[in-house]
Length: 365
Ligand code: G6P
Image (tube, rainbow, N blue to C red):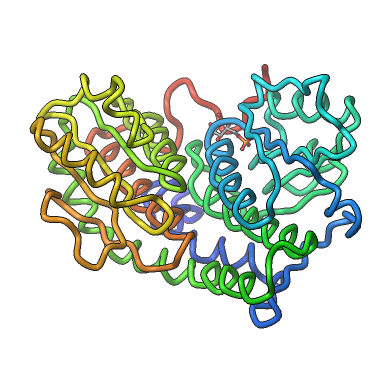
């Protein structure tokens, strides 16, 4: 067991540290940065790609947040109407046109019962389906019309970490592919995105190298009453994912909010003992979130910035510095949140790899 953990105390920390490699694997042999092209070995015809009117993403848990991230990318670069559905809430609405709807199941295991049920509903309604999964030969890989593997390698820790990064990166590649096929993304725009994507492994490594700062911060705040995560646009799914990670493995109360929603209710929960972690990178309307940070700060809450700003605002108690990689910065910022969750849970001596009541793959509805 110790050997399999490769010297790490927990699989989760090992898997957090495997992210640069996992992302490289997701990119390997699939992109041509100069030409601005992506090859995912899909059987979608050019004509079909152009005819897509809507993409519906179905997923659960962390995969759902990767889906929310992808929705922002797809809307911006592939010019497709997107809806993202919690799989257990999914119905293929009768008034939709199944022939022009692509349904994407995002699932690490390929076996989650809620997602499988949603996939079958979409298939039964006549929609084309695509599975984005880590698991070769899984049920959803077999049942979907097409499959793209995220190539993360096995993930043992119940709390998903490296697979989130691999899912987002793979979905970014799918975005570029569809944008190019639909003639809405130029080769130079595609090259820019692919360049940013290829810089992600190095950027994540820089975050991993700064782990001691996160460790210290986690020690400082391990006895808080609750933890709040805020972000806008690409920062919002990352705020949700950061909170999910912390609650899963530390059993502490943590919530992610769209920054602008704070004042519509959650602000009532904010005290001097509820740290607020704010995502302030490219693609997150950072200036606006900064206003919200000032709101919580004036109520005495400690503020932790996860920021790629070169001149971070003095309003923060601590800043976790995110390297600049354009619209991929929030997925890099997420690595700080994984480490924060890990170190808070570690302070509390929790069962990090196997949190109470949770399972890696939930095969009941
Ligand atoms: C379980 C796991 C989560 C995971 C979710 C979806 O609840 O504990 O970590 O995000 O299932 O799993 P999937 O395999 O479909 O991505």
